[in-house]
Amino acid sequence: MLGEGILKGMAVTARNFLGSYHDPARLVTVEYPEQRSALPENSRAFPFLVFDGKDPEKGLRCVACKICEKECPPQCIHIVLERDERGKPQKHPHIFDLDISVCMSCQICVEVCPFDAIKMDTEYELSSFDRFGSLLWHKAQLAKPNSRFQWIHPIEAREVDERLAAERAKLEAKAKPAPPLRPPMVKPAAPAPPPPPVAAA
Image (cartoon, rainbow, N blue to C red; front, top):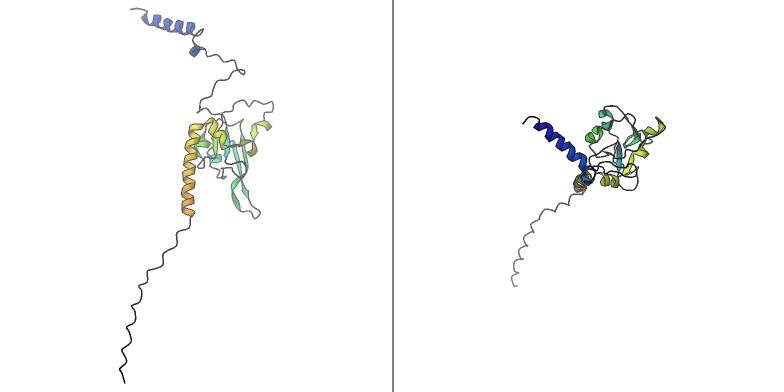
């Protein structure tokens, strides 16, 4: 029938138009910021550093390997390795800066990190009147507890926690001292033969 496709298309348009007034599934308008839609788990904004425990400095997972800095396409990550009093490098970042005015949220830094130390946050309300200072985030601003990661990405966080726990268990098993070797079994010596009887005088 001539024009059948046009009629079907118009029927779909009319159904969506009329349904948008009474069908809750079609009421897509959200009165932001009074109302907010729930973000999907795989949504992402900008990276943050994960730390375990209560101390954001000692519990930081980052070991300053600089893989994320090298792999970042816009080169928005800057890391300086921490050193002790003798100048010996430590597995800890002294400086970890992220320029979110340059970051394109590609998540490559997350994918290449071998220590699960950097993850993507979902916070997007980051507008500022200062285009330079407030958009350059330092280590203290980037460090967030593992509970934050568990809250915004529960499925991924559960997998990461289980994998890290298994790795720690393997390391602890290797670090345990080996049980002492049992001394070799020594065969007891045969008893000495009795002395010969003394002849009577």
